[in-house]
Length: 359
Image 1 (spheres, rainbow, N blue to C red):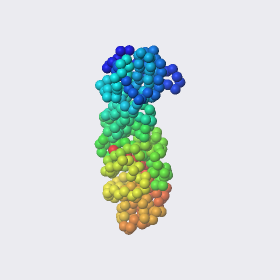
Image 2: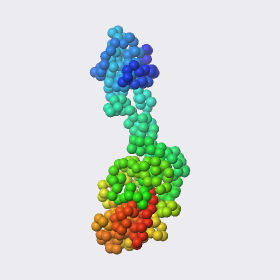
Image 3: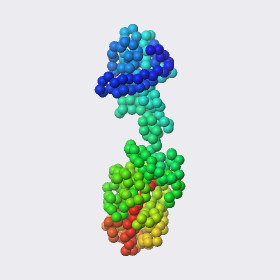
Image 4: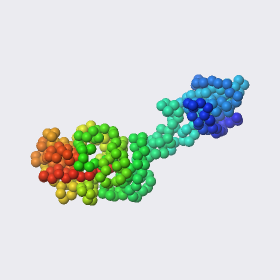
């Protein structure tokens, strides 16, 4: 095979059960030898046969073939050598060095990814920039927010979330939280305890009913991997009461994920104001006039009273000791501990369907 300083292409066939079929470009350099990286030595009739044997082993990255003796060395190394790079090679008359451009060395990486040696895979693989994944860095981790597909309407899209392909209904356009693409995170039913304040779903990285996010703003509960792996600068909160028109508010907050704001149980303040929180409920909203403790992991000083993973608490004093009223998501405490999303206060027990999205 005459391939000095040019690219050749060969196919490998499976000869052993543990070997996988591969295809590869070869950069061959005549009268050159790579020393110190041989893992296996065999006899071979010609350079092509030597190359095919290397091709059948995923760990083999290059070969040395000496024509006079038929000696074929199969090399393993974590660097790439091209026809223009002979720094690591030594002169050796009658020997041909062949570098195999397998995987990303042959096909390249998209979206600024780099082809690097992956010790776990024992082969060259794409190392992707943030927000990109896949074998060639072709998958956008958060296409909802970036609107890669340039959509103007809500549409079902397959996203890569926590290394899994998940079909979700991405929300585009201004449905109540402003323009742009919104990535769904959770949907919760205030009549159920799935996402009660004490639920482990707020502190773990487990999903719930992934199919629930394919159906939009309805009554199916869900929790997606976007709860712990999607960064944002805005949070969209929505409530729907008795299948009436949903109402939404927006929190301007930058974070690595919603998990990072909630899972540790630490209180983090927001400053939307009581009127904004009440707008989620509408004219029926009831909230005691004092305390007004709002944000993430808001709890009364006395633990048996109101608490909310996201929301606001009201009390008859500013001490926030005995908050009997609240509006929020992931709620609990007096007076109705069964209300996990909605409004408690003034003798009212309004249970809502809650929606959380990020951008």
